[in-house]
Length: 334
Image (cartoon, rainbow, N blue to C red; front, side):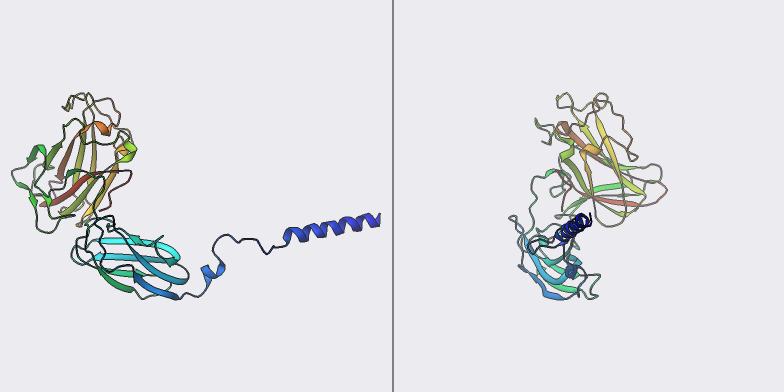
């Protein structure tokens, strides 16, 4: 009996040794402790693949650096003329093609121009100093697949109707303050008796309309908005008219209009983006009622209205609009 017990005990010890032994060929998954908790050093300083990037033909550039351990980092590129900004972030020990490539776009409006830019690399939890460099853009990013409702580079655009109060000036300015390009729409005035300041109707009644996808999940509407006067007391109402029976005419009594509102937040250019699939609910996520079939059909869109409104008790209001565009699959990157 004692011999049997000893044999069993010996077998259990062997099994324990076998299951707890680490083989030499085992691969450790995940970052090493040294990469996470070692001493931080900059092994390779910030370098740029080019200091004169040309983004005009799908071009890009890369920022390179190497640290001794993984660290949170941020690269901020700032246009010294436009004030445009692009921010790239990550948590890595090596910066390069996989995580620090720039194709010329901005994080929000305004967009970059052909200009000199300041580059700042910060590693906030490791060093206090900012690592700096400069570059000069020699060619601008070209937008791919945009459906432009209005960009104001050639005036107000293809409109079918417009309105403004007698005390409101609604015009295109080309004074260098555009969100992108040279020109933008300015709506400015004092209306003490009404919320309405002015609107513009854009209509495309060609056979294909705006040529959007039939899938509302893949269509995004975008606009650049800037409140110079009337921040948080003014808003833009965007309306989208669908020609459900394909007769080339929108009938508000029997066809769908989808409406959204964007309230201004600050006095800088802001990118407003919304998926077409979100137009059928209100701000509280409740379904909205329409006069048509109630089905989101972006491929039948023939009209867009941009309507500026402001609190009549708030005094003078000045609001800018630019880059009313549709994009596919994701919001616009200026």
